[in-house]
Length: 146
Image 1 (tube, rainbow, N blue to C red):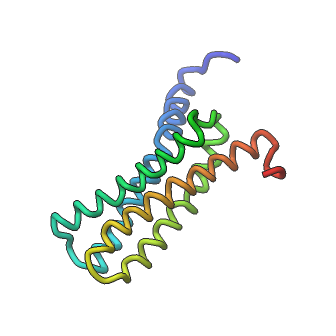
Image 2: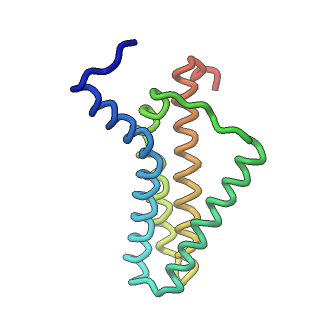
């Protein structure tokens, strides 16, 4: 494989940034929209509401981290195609978290804040993981076996 030419290097750098940013970008959109939905349905948050939102997100992240460490101590080896394909369909992960937040926004009271953050985090990270796994299997020709 030859070295990229000067005109191609910026595009390869962009591809590197996009691959590295796909999951954090999707999670940022998920958390922002989840918080905005709850703010819309419950009004501006108090500092305590924000703390509850953060605690809900941390709890979901910690639960998924423990689960993954317990049952999959090493990460799935991904290749460029996996992340590109999965990144194209993160819309499902973001959409599921968005929909859950809308429904949780119907719950009255302070419980909606941590529940929305927990659900958004758990759904986004879980579905994004499934999307990457499916893309990986598809690239390796295992899609029909899954």
